Length: 306
Image 1 (cartoon, one colour):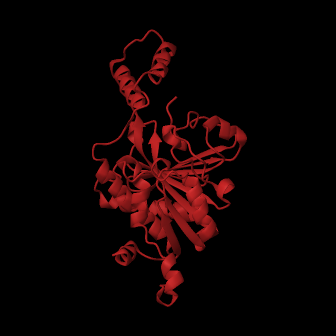
Image 2: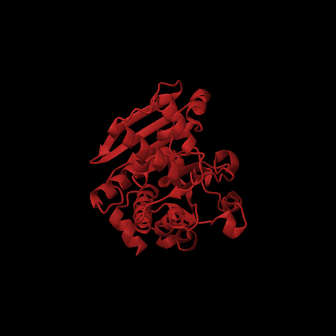
Image 3: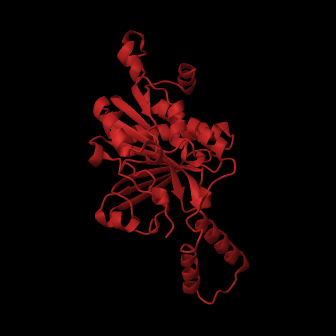
């Protein structure tokens, strides 16, 4: 079984399942959106995803130096954040950057926190100087269990208990089952998140049930399993050569067996991952800054930051 964090990659996403609605549409030049709504237990079991809404923004040119595409993705993502958050976005918002800043493919969350325009301290200590358009935003990068010795969920629970935010937005690096999704897709979900689930290192879930606060999860696939790459390459080769491997069932068994071989649990990322994480952090932070502060332009938020 190839693990994936993306609802759009679920096994049965193309089938008609009661309680599952899939909507596809283009939202800007080169930017595509897929919305998956799961509203039944049957749909939950079929897709292996919790009941809720999953939105993915996809662009082949994302984080490749195309300013128009990056800004289009940021604006589309901002609109989805506002839509998913509802009235909670009018209250205090805690942005949580999950992951290990010492491991580049896992550093997206902390990198986003460094770019987010935080304002809670201004509201508290200098209210007379606050621009009325600014929301109340705070951010934290709690690190990982292996470094802190503390469960990420425990840290967030403690901070949330003190700050009492109306909404938590958790950012994390994800895993994909498709090479094509790595770095090109941003997923937003109102179901919360289990840190590390995409690479089989599942921790305590961060969601409304555990924290008592709505949690929006936002992430980008930055790693893929070595066995996924092998399957993709083998499948592509077979399709191109039209090779006869006796039977499709036999071939599927061969592919399935590949995931059980030594090395199949290795994860692979991009050689230019440093720049990719930096660019994606800016794009996601732009979206958050647009969504969490009322009627501010990107230029204004960047000026405030610097």
